[in-house]
Structures are given as structure tokens and as C-alpha cells.
Length: 311
Length: 311
Image (cartoon, rainbow over all chains, first blue to last red):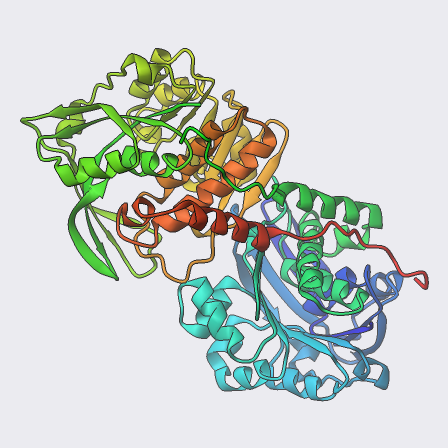
């Protein structure tokens, strides 16, 4: 099944304890597309400026990502984000945000993008997300992200958007903020009650949790001794998750569980190098080997306890 | 195999958003023994005052816990701890600590307690832990807990104790504090390097992680919408973990993994009611049902990704 993603394509500047980069390829739609491209055909919808160069386009081309719907505003500049990570690498401190061409982003979907069976609405203004969803009546499984800014400033529109999608992929702080519930399981129930089929809560170094109408599934994160650059980890997770779903014939509970693992696998690679470098250079044996490692690190035999006869 | 635990037996006073109790049975050795008693024979070693009453002894007796080595200081009072949990229930705020009879606790092990094949050194002064360990030459698997206070004030003695045990069961903050490593996997490696066979890192609502010489295993916590009273959850985990190990013929990687789940199962029950009430009233069908739920919430089929022929 084909997959369309709508979101930011950007340049990032980063400072981490491991080094500094002035201008590297980033953006939610970029990280998502790259991860998803290992599993399915991806249409990326976004906007860039005239400064988006051959090296950047080459990353998309290498992975056969359809960029027909990435609009080029020749006289404009590409969305720019600058951030710093301190020693613990858990929190991004934004140093600068220049929306540039992204400020007036008005997603225009070609017929090809509209026909996708799966759709991912990366973190953009909620009403824009809803408009995109409505342009894709054939989409059988639609997932969305959001962020603290939209939860605060456009809460009502955000909830209207949640009501027309099937799945949210958000982090635990966002789930708590959206519902006002400190307990993550109560928060999840309230988010599900907007009418979702599935909710994925990303928990950083603690892994990710899937809530569905019938069940609960949880996976740890891959054990990494060094997180090099966490930028884009959430979008890379979403790309692996949605890409794997698109590769399967139907979205069952079993398929969703494996999608959680493939999302975690792709995110674990993403953070090993700056920007898109690690995922850009991945191959299938590496992906499948790490999938098997997730199985090994979570498996136990279902042997229930029986009291010895003397008891 | 038999199991001995050395640690505190206490009265707790608690304030939580769900209610208040002035004087309920608590203490590390208490919570540990109760959880472990479902899996094996337990010898508890501790000290109480003359105020320790029939109702308290009855809890131990009901679960066939050997209390011969719980010394009674008739003229003294039992260790008393008072604490408050706020709305998020993650952090205990200590309001009062009265060591009482526990202040001069000098563990005296009977021949029976010394002969145990498994030994758990709950959170007491590290040199005392080491002395107990040396009294049990037959113990084939010895685990210990500790706390921030000992890491700061008796670091050298603590490390000498770690060197003579097989396993530590601590929380993530303690692992970071002990090693000065913010990354939990690097911290774990440094703790293992003291000579452990296994290290369990408890992560509260995020579950627990097992490190061994050859592998890594991680389990989520049971999804609870309400945590009623988290006091003793860590000791209850340790009781389920060590109790299950004692019920098996040998400590293999597979057995350790299931012990992690039984520890998590018992801890999940412990927090559902005040103090020891929930675990005191447990039965085997409940325990095994929750074990099966852990299997369901972590299981996925090992189906690696294969590209479609068209790709």
C-alpha cells in the first residue's frame, strides 16, 4: 500500500556534546520519508526554498521518495531550526526558528498523493492537517503527530482533527498535556475516546507504548550507550511504524505490534549519527538484525508458577 | 531452595491523595517476605519493638514466613517511617523517621537462616550487609539493595559489599548516582564491572531492566490507572524476583527473565492498596493471570521484513 506524508522539510543547525553542525538536512517529513522508504513507496508533501540544493534532493532520490509534491519557492528560504542538546540529550533547547517558506505552507496534493492508502500528518497546524485528511478520502489508516504549541494555542481545532484520524503518535508529555491526566494510562484512555483506533505514546529512552481498542503493547527502547543526535527520532519512529503498516495487507493487532518494533528499530538507528546520515546509509540486514535483537531483549517463556507438591 | 532476607520490619504512616493511615505494617523485609512467600520458604531476619502486635505477627504466620530471627526488643519500639505522596505518586516525601530498635540492628542468623541457598540483603548499612553475606557461605545467589544515603556516606564500604554479592536490585537514580553516568546502559556496565552476575534496574512506571554478562532484558510495568500506595513496591519486586528464583532448580537466563516478570507482577499488586493488604490477600490464579497479561502485552511474532518482489 502507498503512503503519503505531509510535513516540514528543513535545515537544522545543532549543538550537542559530541559536535556541532551548521546546516544539515532535517524536518519531520524528511525523517519520516527516509525511514518509511525502506518498507513502501512514499509520497512526501512539503515546501522548500531556493536554497534547497542537489545534495538534499539526492537523499530523497536515493530512497525513491516521490518529491513531486514538495513545492519549491524559488525566491524563498527553507525552514530553519537551530537547537542545542545538553549532556543528558533528553531535551532539545531551541536556539532559533526561521519558518521562511514554511510559514505560508499550503499543502497541495497531487492525485497520486491523494490516492495513498496510508497517510501521516506530521506536526503542522491542526486545521491544515484536517484539510489534508479530507483531500484523501481513500486513506484507510491516517495517523497524526502534534506538539505542545498546538495543544495550547489551537486546542479546539486540534480535537476536531483528532476526530477524523485513526491514530495519534505523540510523546507522553503531549498526552498528559492534551488530557490534563498525569497517569499515562488514564491519559491514553481519554485520547482514545476522541475516536481513535490506535494511540502510540513515545517515551524516549523508555520505549513506546501502543493502546488499541482491545489491548496494550509496550516495547523498551533499544539499549544505546551513546545517543549522538536525537533530532527526528520521533518522526523516524513514525516512518518505520507507518511504513511497515503500509507493507502489510491489513492493519491487525499483530501487525501493529511489529510496526511498533520497526518504528523503534528505525528510531534507534536515527540517533546514532547526526541528522539523516545513519538512516540514509542503512541496509535490510541491519534492520532485520536489530528487529531480532528486540525480540531477544523482550522474550520470555510463558511458564506459569506451580507450587511444589510439598506446599 | 530456601531464601533468607535481612532488612527492616516497620510501622509506616502514610498520606496519599487517596487517604491517610497512621500506623500500618511496613518495612523492606516485610514486603519482600510476603511477596517471596508465594514461591518458596522464607526466613526473615530483622528487629522489632515491644509494640509489634499480634495482628502484625499474624501476617507473617499466614504466609508461613519463618520469623525466628526477627528479634524482639521488648523495651524498645519498632522502626517508624512517615511519608507523603503527592498527586503524581512518583516521589515519597519523608516526614519523619524514628529508627528505634532498628538503630542498633545487629542481624543474628540462626543455623537455618545461614543455610539458605538464596539471600537478599535489603537496604541496610553496607558493612552489615557484608557481614551477613559472610555468615552464609552456602548461599549460591546473593542479591542486595541500597539507597542514595549509603552511596553518598559509605561509598567505599558499599563497593566492598557489591564485590561479594551476585546481583544488585536498585533503581535508575541509584545506578546513575553510584557510577556518575547519566546514560543508564553505561551506568549498568560500570555496576556490573564490580563483579556482578546480574543487575536489575527498577524504573518505576517504566518497568524494569535486567543486565547479565551475556544479555539484556526489559519489561514494562503493568498498566495501572491508579497507583494507590507505592510504598514497598521495590521490595515487593525483589521478593517476587528472588522468590521465583528460589522456586527453580537453577538460575539460568530464562529463569531470570521470568523472575523479572514475577517481580513486576507482585509489585503491580502491591501498589493497588495500602501497605501489605493487597499482597497479603493474593492467590495463585491472580498471580498467574497477571503473568499471562505481561506475556500478552509484550509479545510480538518474529517476522522479519522482506521486500516485495516489485521493489
